[in-house]
Image (cartoon, rainbow, N blue to C red):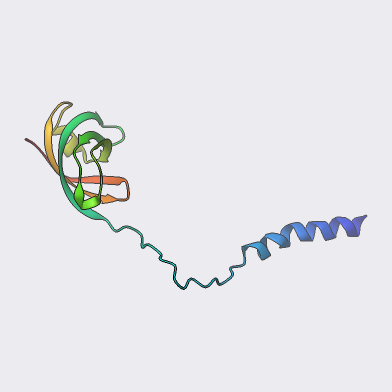
Length: 111
């Protein structure tokens, strides 16, 4: 009984090691996309809300061709100074850096 318990215990701890072992797989002909680098873009929109606790401003903006975004409403990270210079309902022009669907405002001004 003791030997059986030890054997099962050993298998429980050793099995994940073998499962985690990497196997080289030929990737010939497969296209692998690189991670999207941060891109700076310009847009115009309307401030929908400001969240000073999270450090974000939600903006309804038009299409942004530089990052292939359609028109949408989304939050952008912003500094406290940037948040203090705008209010809900303001029409704005802004630049931002994006990584995927996350964006940080680099400049913002009222129209």
